[in-house]
Each structure stands twice: as C-alpha cells, then as structure tokens.
Length: 273
Image (tube, rainbow, N blue to C red; front, side, top):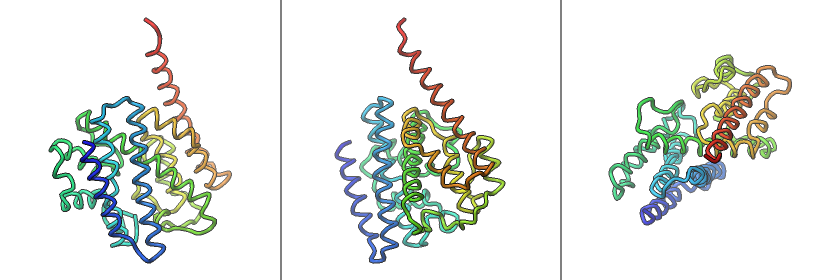
C-alpha cells in the first residue's frame, strides 16, 4: 500500500506540473488547488487517526483525498472558473481523468471502486442514501476534510486579500450586500443550502457557515472550534443583519449540541463498570 501511495503522489505531482502557467492569475489558482489537495490529505489522516482506523482505511482515505479535486486543474484551464454550473461537474471530470489515465490500475478492484465513488460523491449536497458503511466512512471523512480546508482558504482570503479580489475563490459572485431568500430559509432551518441557489457573495459566505450541518466526526468539530471558523465568517458578513445572526446562532447551537453529545458519549465510555 505504501508503494501504491508513493506512486500515486508521484503521478499527482507530475500531473499538476502540466498546468503550470506564465499567467500569474492562472498559476495562483493552480497553486491554490494543489495546496488545498495537500491540506485535505493532512486533514483526512488527522480525522482517521482520531477514529483509530486501521492502516488500510487510512490508505484509502488519503488516496481519495489526493484525487478528490483532480478535475479542478483541467476545469480551470479550460473554463477559467471553479464554478461547476458555468463549466462542468469537477467531480465527474475528475473520475473521467482518473479512468483515462488508468491511475488506479494497480489497485485492488474494491479499493479502486471506493476511491472513484468517493471522488464522484464528494461534492454532492448530501451523501448517498443507500451505501455500505465502509464506503460511507471514507466519503464522510473526505467531505469533512474538504470542508475544513475550504474554511481555512476562505477565511484567510477574507482577512488577507486587502481588496485584491480573486473571482475564482468568490465563484464569480457579485458582492452586492444582499442575502437571497432561498439560502437564508434553508440555513435558518438547519438544512444544507444548494450551490445552484447562490446569487451573491454573501450567499456563499452564509452557505459556508451552514456547512456545519453536514459535519460528521468529533475531530472535525474540534478543528472548527479551535479555528473559530463560524465566527470568522460571520464577522465578514453585514453587521447588524438579523438574517446573518439567525443563521449564525442556528449553526452555533448545532455545533455546541453536537460537541456536547459527543463529549457525553466519550465520558460514558470511560466510566468504570
């Protein structure tokens, strides 16, 4: 497994080099996705180790993380956007690239299938309703690890861009100060908002707060709290907005409830018989 992972990482490095550009704006976004991929790999191992998973599961998880956004490079080169609705589904594109390059030909069939399906499903609004527990574990880890790093990327951008806007990070959304009804209503009810409903940049920021409703593991909640991601995003939304506060309070209550529930379960497991 270690040999396969080393070969996969070597292929990834070579593949990313194909997209090097003399255009600084293009290269900036290629670098962004390369760094994001490496961080997601770190996050998924962090989450997996917190669950005391065996090496075989960690191997699958890291391989899925390494390939989860492989479609982003071709997507940006071809369309100059990371918006799937304006180009094509980057997960489906990634699956096609993996198959065309036969990257997983030396993997066991079951392992290759798990990785491919995790890549295909990582950006869906919800996990598939009918799946094996083993696959859902890898997929949920990937979705958590992905969100954690996107929170890092966007909060660093919001606070450090100094007016130098990057449309790729902002998904080409206009910064009008508004909040769309459909986004607000979904999130204030504790539901996942749809990317297709995004109309303005504030919608995307609120949606990022709402990702808390699709977090699965105790370690992920810890990372969110440690980095104060919800607060950081709230603070770059319109001050005094009742809608912002309502969504934030709903998300914060969910975070606190899930953290307390997991803490109680951990305490009960540690009690002597």
